Length: 151
Image (cartoon, rainbow, N blue to C red; front, side, top):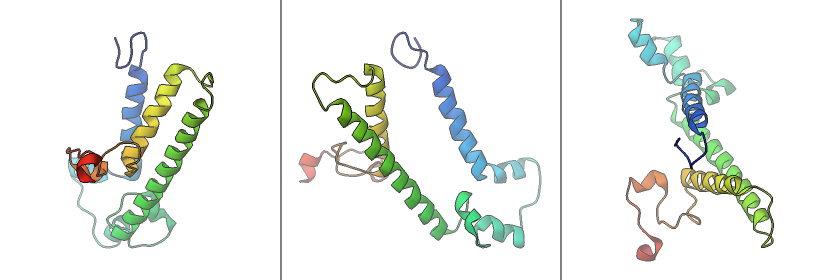
């Protein structure tokens, strides 16, 4: 049996997610300092360091790894808004399936995938209406407090 339900071969999908994540971080330049150190190249100084730290300005600094806290905040805000929109769209697709008792817009496995994507997206951006806990995923640190205890 693969990583999913019986009869499904989810290994290519799983490894695609892993390689996509590694490619995303590589595209941002996350591995550049590690490879620079492994190849024995000196650390950047002067203008190169200012470029890497995001001081040079321009729109390009919002699309790469940076240490500027203002740029990181804007990157995080845009990502959270995008995840909010994606979660809302998947919620609308779920509600379209539940519009009538006999509606069958998608196969059952596709419907479960929609619910899974919706819940992961909500956990990612901290929407607590669907997950039933008092704190978001970034704040809970492995401890989940039910809402009944907090209220």
